[in-house]
Length: 315
Length: 301
Image 1 (spheres, rainbow over the protein chains, first blue to last red):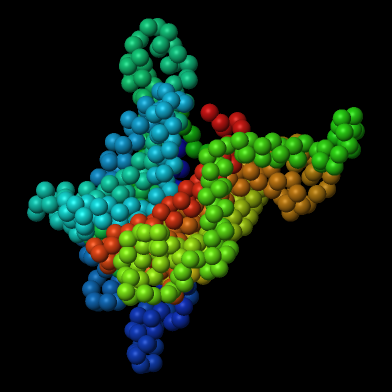
Image 2 (cartoon, helix red, strand yellow):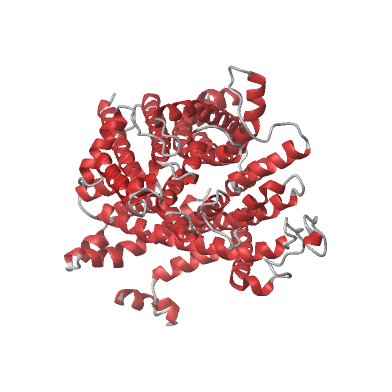
């Protein structure tokens, strides 16, 4: 196997993670005005602002400030919330779980919808089912995520009173209630990702169905089911795994929106609240954790792809 | 060029023919586009939205900000096609006026992304190994953020408002254009016509602008159209979150966020602004897909 690929891929991930920390660090630098003034508010005295500037090291060179900040962040010290003065890190930790639960359930819902539709439409290109699948994926990518959430709430919560419109119950406390709360947000995010994945699964299947080994499998008299499941789908999966990986970033974009719409206590909702309250350290922490999580998931998917298909080389 | 002219002079000498094969390529693409039903449907929808955006306040049946407290939360009727909101304002009129904001933000944000992203991509693909690495790794970093999260973070730094929303959405889509432009450049940088141009003494900038750019144009045109769809979605989301358009500018995203408190009284308030966003985005998606099929027939299945 070509382990050079693995090393290069790991290096790239490291570069990206470092880059993410730099972008996140810069958020605070771009904020118009004096960050110390922003932190203390408009009524603080000039002395206390100067004091804070000194404590935060705002008068030192930018690179030095970044490295100090990075060294702290690497030790899990993301500073204190401007709003309640508490450490940011523990607040972030409590939000990772709910975000991940929502991401996984959304992804599963998305795949459960996308797989059958994608495969069937690839088996019968040009058929009525294929056209319907194309229309479905076109509509799916055009629906605003937050609007879909709103419509689901209007129908299933406000009118039919079947599911709660927002909120969260930890799965350990009450699995049934957890499920009731996660259905609408996960379906909202999952529907959009399903529409994108349907296309990719369809085209990945179309690719392998015309391959020589599939023709051979048919020619040697295997039944169609075996040809599709054992020969075609298995090879198509290699591409599908990568695409799901690429979709993780987009999925989390949807998750952030859905968390805000459904008041789901995840990192996205935390980031949004931090923007509302101008709580920059909290925002920096939340944005950084989400971006790094997404990068790591992408890394794992890429390495998985490498294991599935050793032919791959880094380009 | 001279040989092209002489070879086609037998057939006719009309101005079109003298423009050479590039012109036929675009004309063929245009013909294919006209035959693409979904693309034409998308174009029709967009035409309506653009008319709404241009003429806006002049063609609304009611004053979009005119309140009528006797007629709040009205359901759709012949009088108010899309009903009225919590102030008794005509929702249809507000949707017509809202088209302008969506289109403005979309076009400006995508222009930012196109110019910056394509520029960076051309330089990365055409320049040295080091420039390429630096630019593309920076693009990888930007690409690692979920789109809406990056936009929110940039908005937090720059401040709320429609102008900053345009910048934020534009930055988010820079890496996409950079990657497309770079990929296209890499595909042609060692082609004979580039080498010939260099042998004739053309400088790098001249080669980039007159030889490389025209050849990477079609994937970029497709991406511009599809990015407009994303930009309008992103603007709506930012405005829905209260970060984009600020009162009193009417926008579809803000209509939804302002209506949230009243969905129990009138679910309709949540339906129509969303449909307006949906159809506009769908229009750009359809047109973009049609353009892709028309500009690159090899990709068709």
